[in-house]
Length: 392
Image 1 (cartoon, rainbow, N blue to C red):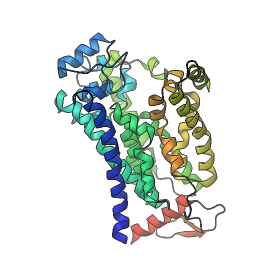
Image 2 (image 1 turned 135 degrees about the horizontal axis):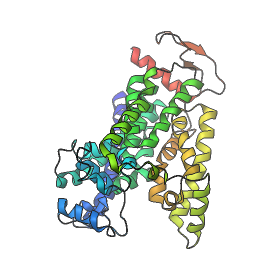
Image 3 (image 1 turned 30 degrees about the vertical axis):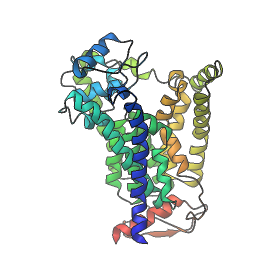
């Protein structure tokens, strides 16, 4: 029985990877198995198209300006920006794009892979990350007193599916997000800080998850270790390095074009969804706005770790500009943490809700203190179980 319970999260992870692989494989197969199908090199940018053709030969151009996968490919060719005049000049906003370094670093083999190998690696590493992220989410669900099948809250998250389809970094960002939450509930705080750092270096908005963790530790009266500053410190060091390497390509003004006045972006996009009617974009927009309200409210009420980690993305939803809201394949990726967090806060029948054990402030880890809480937090119940397992 114990062995089958241990295998369940792994099987969920494999299923998640297979689903994503089928969807992605279908798109690539429709274009004679040309991996550039997902990179989306732009038809309307002759210079970028020539750059891609020079490195890869036969490519499948995308309509209009393509999508973000083309920028990750450029970064994968030179992840440390050692020769920005050869590669980084093809980034529309070099400083902004270059913040997201983990995915292209891995897909490009630290800059050692050939262009042809890299374009396939961008697909493969994302599919592996879907499987690992789904497995970790299943483990996290178990830690929260939920059934393992809720690990599919990772693989079936629309933002994750879209990310795998357009060669972008959200899959890895969410993987590190989930890993950080799992490590915290197991009371492995240094590992959680490292995971949060990797998340922030994968997608800069993930720094908000760190503030959510701090809020959780404050609400549950737990110690806030100094290494929780790692995500901010390491991201800051990378930012300084980019300013140095990119030189004249640095343009801080452009870095803010994805944000605007509160609610203005959603309101403008809403009008365009209605005329002409765009049902998929409209539905996704409405769902995401609802989650932007529900997730932080439920997170604070129940002192939910994953909810508080995702709550900062509600702020992003408020100031997100119209171009980001307009298409579901953009909005779902940016706000993906809200979707997974909501599903992991479902009051599932049988979920633990009894007396909680939390770490008393400023006490040693081996001296837990029993506190009666009303209402109790399922996150903290499971966190205590993790601590007991660690000591054993």
